[in-house]
Image 1 (cartoon, rainbow, N blue to C red):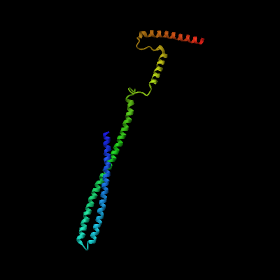
Image 2 (cartoon, one colour):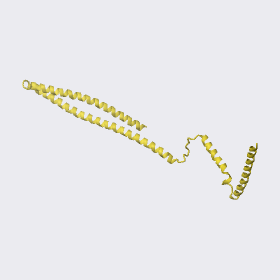
Image 3 (cartoon, one colour):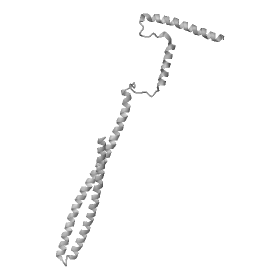
Length: 192
């Protein structure tokens, strides 16, 4: 979380820097316009005084040269500020790209986790099922009824093999006795 906040802070800082640099560029533009106007004025003064007042014309040309030097310095500063704006924009774009990549990576990890959970836990061990407890009881009762209907054909595995045949024959006689009893009851009911 802190690394994400750091990127957001860096992104915000970069955007503030861009705004500040643009303000400085606007101020430079105004200064450049001022120096251009002054250069034109000094050139006019020099032309007007070249014949009648050479020292004034020379002073005007020196001031013009000073304004040109300042204009060159401002051009260099402008180039530096524009480079900084470009770098800050690239940084902001890279931060946005990194955020997009990180979001995409998080989505892929979530998808991977969704896929690997069932694979790593195929029997859903320790995972609660959505089936209510009543459905499980009903299924259990159905299985129990199926086992009762299948009858004594299946001997529990814990009975020794020697006594299995005795248990099977005893169960058959008991079963036949129960069936005969049910048949008599049905006949009695039909007779009424």
